[in-house]
Length: 208
Image (cartoon, rainbow, N blue to C red; front, side, top):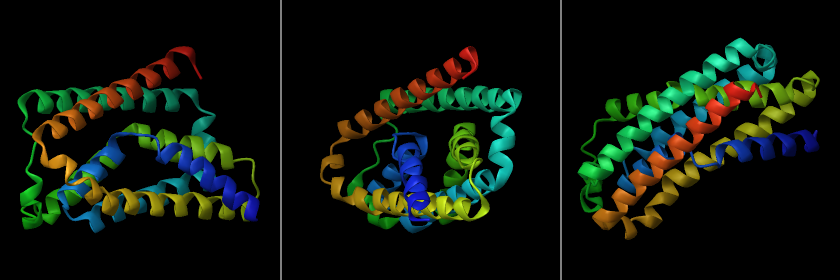
């Protein structure tokens, strides 16, 4: 039981902690102190639902269907390429360099933040590959009791991670008072998105 909890936690951590679109979005909202509780909470709930779906059987079905996984990979690559170009465009124009000093005003409406969080989470097919296909596929060999333990470990890591980077981002606030740091962040986002898209394309091309 304990071993499966730890296994779920380690696998979840290896996927979630890697720098990606969702993590960088949460980090940015944390720096702006923009409805952090809702942003982190939505990311966790989405992970919980998707991992549950994957671990309870759907993940094994999808992972055994190359057509579905390839479609998800292609859509994910296209989404990430678009997001990467958008990030570089912001870096060049300096349009994302929102002043940290004014972040306490929370001018961005809660509805807009919630919709943006849902979009960056659910419109990125790469999220489904991680949570449903990979996590679900790994759990496919376990029995019902072991699956529940595996799920507990996986979602606990998700909860701790998203709330940690959401609320912990404010420690970086002094650094991001400089406009050039926002440019650096956007460039980092762009590079990461292109790299992940490249890996997804290789996944489709080589079939694994």
